[in-house]
Length: 240
Ligand code: FE
Image (cartoon, rainbow, N blue to C red):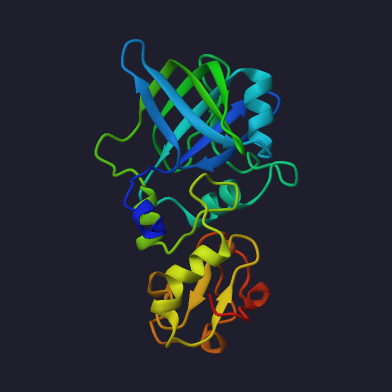
C-alpha cells in the first residue's frame, strides 16, 4: 500500500530558483533544493520539464537559489509559484541582483542565496534533476527562520502547484481532505493557485475568523497565497 499522508512527513524548504542573465530572467518556487556533497559543495534542484525556468537553466547552465523567509509575502509566492514566466515578467517589481557568476538572484524575502553552475542533468521522467557546483553564496539574515514546506502547508494553508514534484492530484487530495471537511461549509477554490477557502478555518491571518462563510468574507479579501480577487474564486462542486 501507499499512504500519501506519509509523504508529508518528509521535510522540505521553499526557495526561488532562478536562471538567466542580465537581460532576461526567470524563476519559480521550488521545494526540492538540496546539498548533494560537501567537497566540493554541490547542489541539486528538480524542475518540471514544462517549466519555463527549466529552459533557462539548460540555456545558461546555471541557477541561483534564494532561501525564503518564513514570513515571505503571499504575493511573491503567488507570482513565482503559480504564474508562468511565459505570461508575466516575474522579475518586474522584484528586487534582484546579478550574482558574481552572472545568474539573477532574487533578494525579496530572501535570507540567504547561492549560485550554482550545472555540471550534470538527469532525466527523471516528468522532471529534470539539475546538479551543479556552488559558485558563490551569501547569508543575508543570520537569525531569520527559513520558510519550510511544512509551515507553508500547515500555517499558510498552501498546496503544491501542479508542476511541483510533491504535487498530489485531486483524487489523492480528496482522500486526505474528505475526512476533515465533511462537515464544513462550502469550499471555494482559487483558480490561480489552488488555495481552498474553508469556512471552518477562515483566514484569521487576514482578518477573517474561523466560521465565516465565503459570502460573508469581505469583497476586498484576496487569496492569501497569490492575491487573486475573491470574486474569481469558484465553488467546489465535489467538496474535495
Ligand atoms: Fe491563489
